[in-house]
Length: 217
Image (cartoon, rainbow, N blue to C red; front, side, top):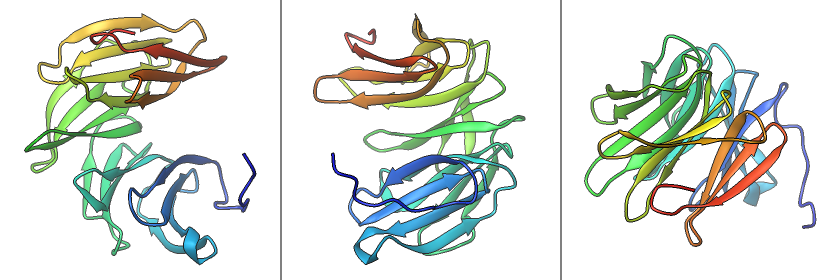
């Protein structure tokens, strides 16, 4: 648990950090409206700065089918797709009529989708190829802050909200399967450990860890 390095990466709060699946790169997203690419094999040098969002950048994530591409979600209501080799976005989508807090890819055997969570209390499922919304997941009564796609025998989508709940949706039918009430307040982030099938919730007053049992935890 020794600290490797510490440096000031942005001029404002950092909202998201993600590691490249194979290269020595880290992406960081900030309230300064920028996304930065860091190379840890070259002294943690900032090799690129991606600009284009007009509000806080809340989340970045790599495309699981093409790690040269990443997506970003912002409070400017948009989702943008970027190539690591270009500073301008490949695509920009007005995903919601309010801020977008989270984005998560949903990869199947032959098709790629992505899911967005917003301050409009909804999550949306998008077709990656056509950039069209296929389904709106409604039911939360406050901002949807976090999304996790869980791949097990039965795949499902987990959404976390400032309404103190986590909702579990079937990833094929998009039906609501279960609602879990957090005893530790608002749900800000969700993680998944595949091996032991554990869901981790980051909440106002601490962390909750639960075991996934047939779409429930």
